Image (tube, rainbow, N blue to C red; front, side):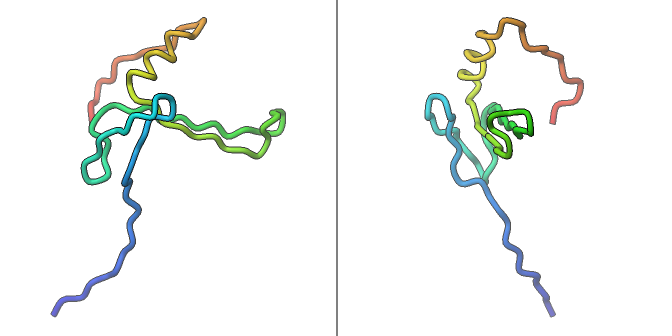
Length: 82
């Protein structure tokens, strides 16, 4: 006899870079290239108090973005690759 539990699972169906609009390829809901996922939860002292902003950037747009920083982003080598 078999018993099954019905589950509804959220799966990513489409992913686009918010800057250039390019669609990021997915396989079974998993991005097949590097994507930066940003999120800002704005607090009390912000003009955006109570808002949550989120966006995704392809690797090319991320690289272009961080080149504009006056103080470079800190880049560390990861010892464990997942």
